[in-house]
Length: 383
Image (tube, rainbow, N blue to C red):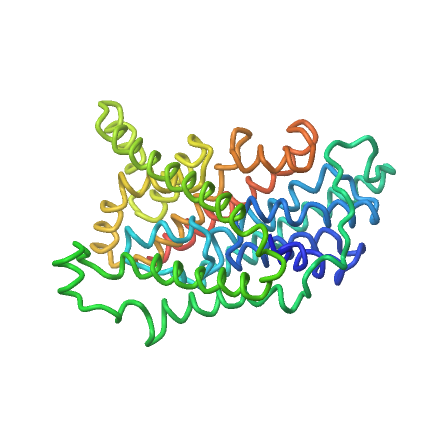
């Protein structure tokens, strides 16, 4: 509504220039995602600037979806410690952790994904350049040029994102954490919250995002005062959709767990590895692929098997933070199969087809999945 997301994307892309066009788009997506902007909103905000700089640099338009996917659907979605995306928050309810769980593992995965993903995209760019393939013509959904003068200042635009990051950390991991706001007996007797650790990340993120939203509104009062009602309606609709999607997925998981065949499936997953981290990684990744949803597969897997993994991990002396991080990272792997909603939406936004662009999205997905399994195997060897 305020144009702040577009302003941030524009400044980052403009700063790197056409020589580093792919990296610029990846970093623009990463900055917005880590600041709490929805993945779908990121795609809408970044696409016009990605299209413009790819056209200037002579890079095929068909590489835009994979570039946006690398920046928004991978490391900032579930690997980077503290990311406010739902895939990093869901495990906190099952393991009593927070959004910053297992930071070294998360940062290691982030560096590897970014490095290998950039290597692949740059390789594809050079291949296209070698055969004289440029941006292309007769594309659909070409964005209209955005008047830079209508965008809010960059430094003003990043304030809400920075506030989200700062306050999320303050309310999660400092002496001001929401963990200490209420008496434990009150929470248990009145609200049935036995372990406050299971709600700390949700509460801190809600407060941090609320602060970010209020800041965005106050900094752009004149621009949004006429469209605020419409914007809030759109936001509420999107929120309800996310709530009901997650609720239905958890409900579906509970129904599946009562079916006769589930015991055979769960036994196979449990027997895949004696180590709960590797077993959990397999379970989450498989279910995310089946459902075509990272949050859906993650919710179902942890609802059905989270308590089991936590029990085994405690017995083996494995930190719940490792369970959190690997569950989160595994969800963002095979979820991006062709039927994934984010993939379909991304291709629709860019006006491209699966035939044109899905190959590179899939390769990024394979790299992401392989890196997570590699790290899971490495960690399982030393614990």
